[in-house]
Image (cartoon, rainbow, N blue to C red):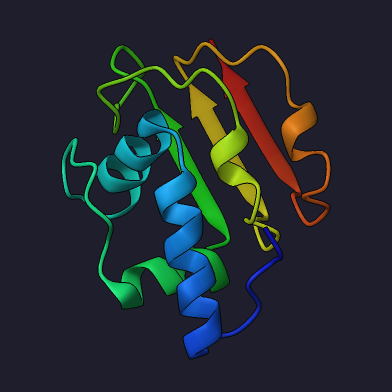
Length: 116
C-alpha cells in the first residue's frame, strides 16, 4: 500500500482497502485504543479513518494486563502499522511482539517503547 498523504476521494478508497486487509487483531486494536469503539471489527467512519492515516503521530497499545490497558487482546505483530509513516511516538506493552523489523521504514519515530 502506498502512503496516504492527503484527504482525497482516491485516498479514501485506498484507506478503506487497507482497513479491509487488516488482520482482525489490528481492527480490534484500532477500534479499542484509537476510536474507543470497543472490540468491534467494523470500519471506522471515513473521517476517523483518514485522520488515523494522515494526522495521528502518537499511538499507544497496552494489552489486557498492562498498566492502564486500552486493549483486550495482546498484539502479535506490527503489520497494522505499515502506513503510519507520520508516527513519532509508538508504545506497546503486554504484547506478544518479539521483532520490530515490520516498522523499520517508519523513520519519523523518535520514541519507541515496548514493555512485555
